[in-house]
Image 1: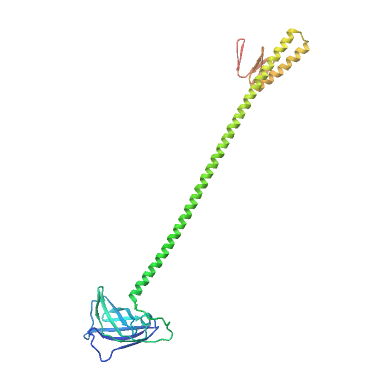
Image 2: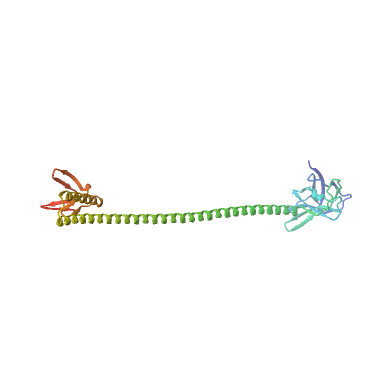
Length: 296
């Protein structure tokens, strides 16, 4: 609980019989309050001043300024420990009233005695101005806030760089995968083309083989006929040769899936025979006109 020291001070600064006294001790922090009733020629002080403060000059020559609150003709201030850093009777102690442009009026002085304390740090006393202290505190808070904001900005920038790195990596992976798929597609196309070419070659070879077989069958029949004309073979030999030729011609017709004509005999693939009854044979992809049969 604060201790209040009450004073009565006049701005005309008449020298009193004995100065009013306030006694405090070093190290007391925020517990000593000075309340002064201000008069002007004995009348309550009415002023348009916007601010007030306590001005102190310590015995060792250091000074202190403490902001005071003003209510009507009464001013009040609480002494911080920094304003009591030097012990001894102060050379000066008074209240000052000011506007934004500077000091307007001051009160008569009073005796302010600071008693020594045994538990102080032993540091040298320093001048103290609570307005400057508050300004420094605001600046310090601003600096700390700026550091936090800079740290947040750096974190955001690092996160952005990380995301950009991930994006670049993903893009590189996509390009690589696309190239792999393109290569695989080209290889598959090449393999398909190769397979198609091989199939076409095989079909061509098969067709050639069938043509060769047809030619061989016709040649065999011609040879048989020639043999029959030169030296009459036995009926058994001729029949066996003709049967062999018929088997070969039928195989060629089935292989080529088309009609094969050798001499005056036509051989039909099995899948072209649609019906057979007695001496009547019905063939697919064929037509008859008079005595002419057309085989497609």
